[in-house]
Image (cartoon, rainbow, N blue to C red; front, top):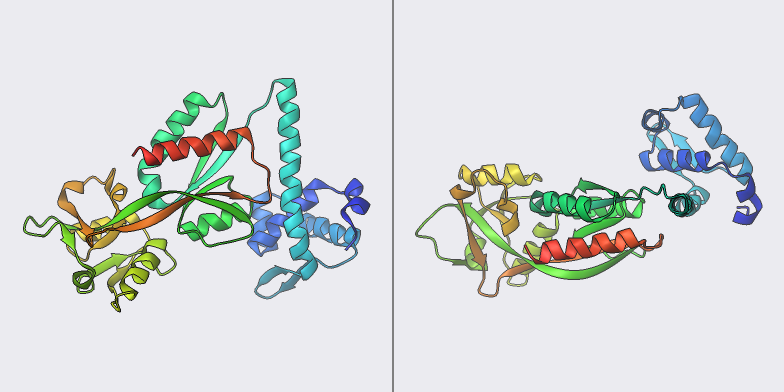
Length: 304
């Protein structure tokens, strides 16, 4: 591949934007719709980029589009280039006094239920006209969005190590057995007892499920899964109707209208805890807004 210095002067930033979109969506058709660009024009721009670089970047087959080795390499650089362009534009706008910064945050569903409102409210009142967007998803999903440059900050449960992210653990959140109200139930449920209780849990890639299986596996025990559900609200509804029990943090029942119909029991004498980390991309420099938002998120979670 030509060096960056050779071709950057002739580089069309739009071509990089188009290339990233096609690569991440794996489809010219979907990228065309997302970008609002006619598919022939989109294909032409990608082809011009390939000609400029002197090699194929994408392979097309009946199942979609995927990157060649060179395309994968370019994709990593392209994300960083576009971020630097955005940062340069932002700094120049700052000099003109027209800077409008924005930040994108990813939250797991259990945190989003109680954190989104105070986060957005406090951010809007203290960040001098900057804007914030909040995305909700499982930890593995928002970690992937962070790597792809779609998010600036991600709050993760038990994040998977990656050279593309810098994750710092800052808090531990206790998980509880959530069940229908039962006044005769003990305050603590043992892992042995938990193995006999039908559970309504998120799918296998969910951090809480992995944590539970690790804790029980250490005692040669296995959870009893009744239903796999990824939505927190749906899980709580099933629990409320007696169709199983859940393993979730206390914050999961915040804003749940029927929270009086369920109760929490501690898991084991020492409790079961999930690690929370704040993650940012190692490919992009931190901004003052990013650092301030991280501190705000820490403060809101720790004080909750």
